[in-house]
Amino acid sequence: MKIVVIQGPNLNMLGVREQNIYGPMKLEQIHAQMKEVATQNDVEIEFFQSNLEGEIVDKIQECYGDAQGIIINAAAYTHTSIAIRDAISAVNLPAIEVHISNVYRREEFRKENMIAPVCTSSVVGFGPFGYHLAMMGMLQIMNEIQATNEAQVAQNQA
Picture 1: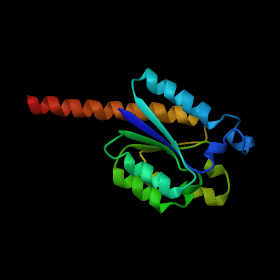
Picture 2: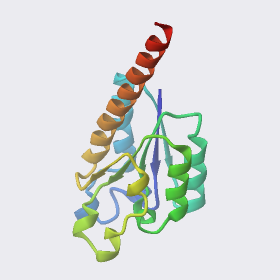
Picture 3: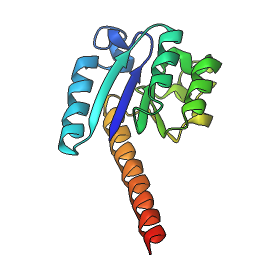
């Protein structure tokens, strides 16, 4: 099984930008922790970060037929991108959105969320630990899908 982690604009600047909001942890550190969890659970994990909306859409589309789940922090595109929303909807994979800060306690424009309605779940406001929570959630979802598929195969063979 494979999970693709997609990071949006400015997340490459974690640990540098607005530490009072996002904390001191760098993106590479977050990814290292996620990789450790994936390895412990025998799951392949791939990381992608872009500041460009079209590249994020392309990456989501590449997940079709290649991955079983997406964890995405679309960052500022969360509030504006119908294209990312449509791509998530089109691939029809479990997707969990992550936001490091609690966007609902910030500026008014951040309360508009274009992608949440097409995501399986959202993890908001837990800092970098939110990625760990998303990993646990995605592993659970993937296990449930696998168990359902195995039960259907067994039922068809009976």
